[in-house]
Amino acid sequence: MSKILITADRVIAGPADRPIADGAVLVDVDSGVIAAVGSAAELEASVDARVPRLRSPGATLLPGMMDCHVHLAFDAGPDLVSAVVDATPDELAAAMADRARQLLAAGVTTVRDLGDRGGLAVALRDSIASETAASEAAASGAVAGPRIVTATAPITSRGGHCGFLGGEVTTDEEIRERIARNAAAGADLIKVMASGGALTPGGPRMWEPQFTPDQLRLIVREAAHHGLGVAAHAHGTETIGQCVDAGVRTIEHCSWRTAEGIVYDPEVTRRIVDNDVSVCRCVSGDWQLFLKQMGPERAQQMIESIGEMREAGVRFIAGTDAGVPGARFGDYVGMLEFFASIGFGNTEILDMATVNAAHALGLGDAGVLAPGRRADLIVVDGDPVAELDALRRIRHVFAAGRLADRTGPDNG
Image (tube, rainbow, N blue to C red; front, side, top):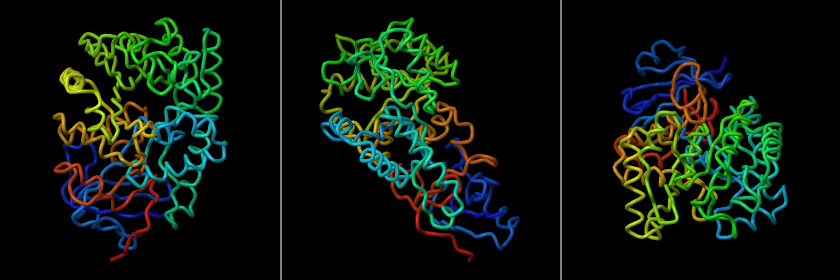
C-alpha cells in the first residue's frame, strides 16, 4: 500500500485556531485518504523508513481550500452570455477544464459550480474524479482539477436571471420536471435563482422575487425527494427571508437589496442562524473596485450588514463567483482578504474556506485533516494565520492523495 509522510512547521488540521507545531500528515495514496495526523516526531518514529517523506520547512500544511460559488462555464469577460451561448459544447468543455486547472493550482481542491450548461460540469466532474483515482495520476502528478460539486442548470423564471443556461420554468409541474431532469443528469444539489440578478438583460431586478413562497417550498421539497439540498441566489431582503423559511441550505449573495437600497433584517438573520443556513457572500478578488462602484454610503451599509450577521452567529462560507465579469479564476485569496479588511480574523477566514465550506456542502469527508478523511491538502510557504498572503505561496497541492504539482517527495 503506497503512502507518503508530509511534514511542516505547522499543521492546521481544522478548525484553524488549533494548529499543530512541527506537525505531519500520513497519506494513503492508494485510497486517497489520510491515515494519520500528529506531531512530526511521533509519525517519523512510527512510520516505516521506506515510506517517502515530503519535508516542508518554513511551511504550513492545511486542508485544501473550497470555492463554494463558481461558474466554470463563464469566462469572466464583459459579454459572458454571448461567450456561453455561442461556444460549441467542445469549446466550452475545453475552457471549463482549463479553468478547473487554474483553481487547483491556486490551492482550491473543491468547487461548487452553480451554473452549468448542457451537463458539461457533470462530465468534467466525472472526468476529474476518474483521472484522480487512476493509479498513473499518483506517479505523474497529472491531476486534472478540483473535486466538483455541481447544480447543473439553475432553476429560474421565464426570461429570468441566467435563463440562457436552460433552466427556465413557469408552472409547478415544470418545476418538478426540471428538478427531476437535473437529478437524473447527475446534479449534486439544486440551484434556484430566487431573485433577479445583473447578468440577464431585461430580467427581474436584483431585489425582485422570481418565485412565490409556495414555489420556493415546492423546490425544496422536490429537491429533497431526490436527495438533494438547495442553494438559493437571493439578493432581495424579502426573498432572503422566504428562502430561509422554505428550507434552503445556503443563501448566495444575501445582499439585503430593496427598491430603496440596502435594508438589513435582523429577524431574518436570526432565522438563518436558527435553521443552520450558511451564507456565501460571493466576493471576487476585485472587491476594492466593486466597493468604489457601489459608492461610500452603500458600501458601508453592505459592510455593516455583514458585520451584524457575523455578530449574530451566521456561518459564512467562501465563494468568489468566479466567471462573472471581473471575477477571475484562481484569484481566491483576494476574496479572503476582503473579509480581513472588514475585521474578520484569519482563523475565522480559514474556517470559511475549509470547515464551514465542507459543512455547507454536505461533504463529511472534507474540510479538516483527520484519519479517514479525503486527502485534499495544500502546503504553503509561511503561516496563513499570521498573514493570509501565505496562501498565494503554494508549494504543493494534493487532491485525494495525489500530488498535483511537479515537485515530488524525497526519501532523505
